[in-house]
Length: 269
Image 1 (cartoon, rainbow, N blue to C red):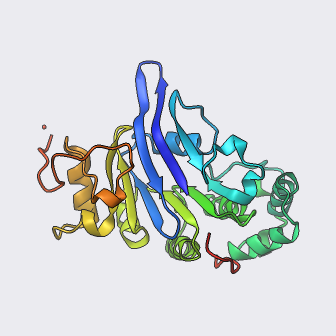
Image 2: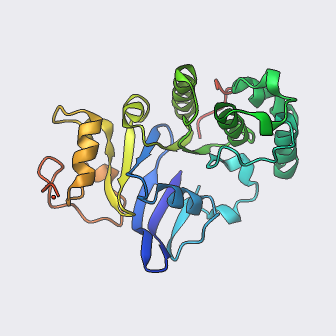
């Protein structure tokens, strides 16, 4: 479970994220959408304790990330594909992470097989393509067998087969009862992957609803997304999907004013 309440982050006079609140529930893939510069990556970094919010809080399983006893076992994240020492092999990179996170070394081989890098395990990561780097980052996220996972633009650099693989992976993770939050600028891919959506832009919540609700008028997700991000109204879906700090929106989406692994088996959490 991820819970964001009143999250705010400013850089000088610029608000990257402002008073943002939403929940990410287990058992479903939640898409995190917004135009470039809308604050998606900043929000994910604050959830992971990499950036300190100016106000508000982000909790993972009820606690801030820095207070988790064994973070790697509770939450895994792919935020930057090439977050590794280029001189290390894929196996060495994951082994070092496992040692620091209290994870069995046996998991290294398991996750390398899961992401399709078993044959490249002893190749220096600095020679990897972007797609291979993405797979290594996903392996690192899965290493601790966590119940909460965050992926920031995970399909970047993947070929069509790889895109389909990551789509199936995220769905299978959610089906096991895990919490899965994935940001992407590929709206068509989110239409195939996510069941729930959190849309922001710029830095503020625009929608916290299901894909089905957002496209209930018959429009495609892409059409609904562009209509939402170009309008002034906030669409919050049904009350069951609204963060408990929100107030109801006075206007529905249809009436805004446009502006000029196959992972190892685990019990659900």
